Length: 262
Image (cartoon, rainbow, N blue to C red; front, top):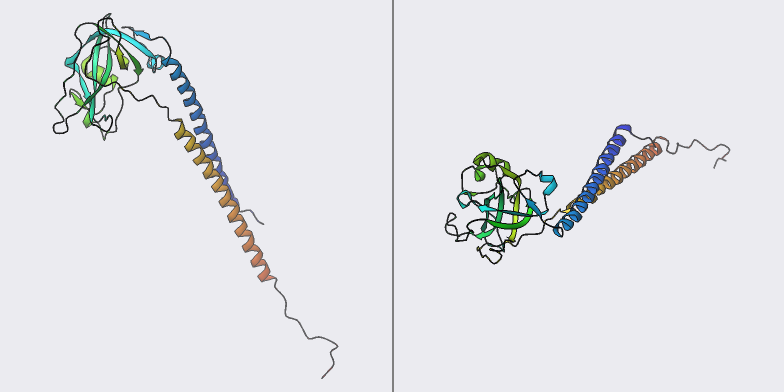
């Protein structure tokens, strides 16, 4: 059987690429599993204190944190399209002016949205004066899908998304490069403070299962490419044998010598 070079090379290239992509997805899954273990460890660790000193996002993301300062309700931003229990609502994001200087954004919680009037904000309370909050450091205040940036234009109270860097540039505030996803109040004067916001946050998900699924998909494609190559090679070999049989088929027999005349 003759091996056709170009089809064989194509099959090998497809197999090499898909197998490599499968291993890459496996490595990504292992990295996310390690991150998930770290997140669990951070959840049980002592909260870190947030001060005016800048902290790199990669050093504090997913850590428990505490921050003491004063909320600035005049600079609040409501993040739209954040449903909770199938009910439309907002995330209330507000700067906290730290007692020792500097600012940090706080995602204070969820607020239901009026069905009839999107701009009608339900009542909620903001504590006056210095208060200490506790939460989880996150890279942003959650992100929702949007086409373009029209829903996140600057100087709007209701937006689709809010980037820390863009909000710092918009307001001129020296913000920390992360958002505190508030879980509650911890200062002696405010543990029982009821602000009317829901802080039932979804657990951080690293989505390991998706990478595992992609890994098997890529390896399945490699196996399919191998199976297709073997099937094509077998068909080509069968066709060659049939053609060879036709070319060297049985020859016409000549007269038989020595036969007696009737």
